[in-house]
Length: 94
Ligand code: SF4
Image (cartoon, rainbow, N blue to C red; front, side, top):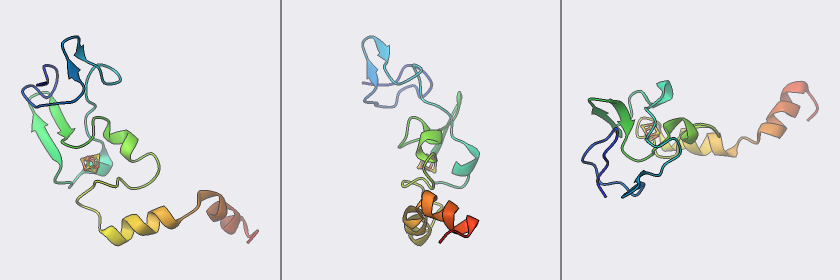
């Protein structure tokens, strides 16, 4: 169904007859880390991601896996880092 909130006219899985059923009732705008990504779409209501309704959530565990402005190698390296081991390594325990 087409969005009737912030991305008006865009087909969206969260839109229903009861309105937007995404967390908060609408998509969230992109964040600073998204700058340069080709998936940013500008609407009169702001800049949004064409693939993620909540861009900040895509960056919570490191690099966004859908980002077009980050090289694949960087994404793989970011996934390889275990935060627990990294903190132990930094403390000199490994
Ligand atoms: S794909 Fe990821 S980096 Fe790109 S705009 Fe969406 S959330 Fe931001």
